[in-house]
Amino acid sequence: MTKKVLILSSSLRPNSNSEQLAREAGRGAVEAGHDVEVLSLAGRDLRYCEGCMACHRLLYCPIQDDANDLIKKVQEADVVVFASPIYFYAICGQLKTFLERTTPLYVQPYRFRDIY
Image (tube, rainbow, N blue to C red; front, side, top):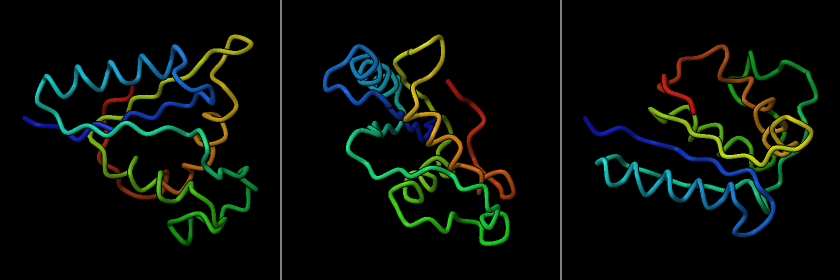
């Protein structure tokens, strides 16, 4: 069964270790017969969540930046993989900022069941 796999790399450094791991994970998923898209958060306009909770009513974030397109891709994926450098024993700020922006998914159906 082919799955739609979305791999999000959050390193801002080109060709970083986590970027290379994301590409290799994508290569392995393709070899396993899955449909894979590898995207990077680098260079994207991702603003902070404002906590307005309007997304629960609208089903999308009212902030106009690159997050809504990425959130849609997460929503449509069967498998989501996050690749992040580890700073101060946690995921990097870029990924944390993006994950906070996925709040519209909490109140609507999504396909993914596997997260790595």
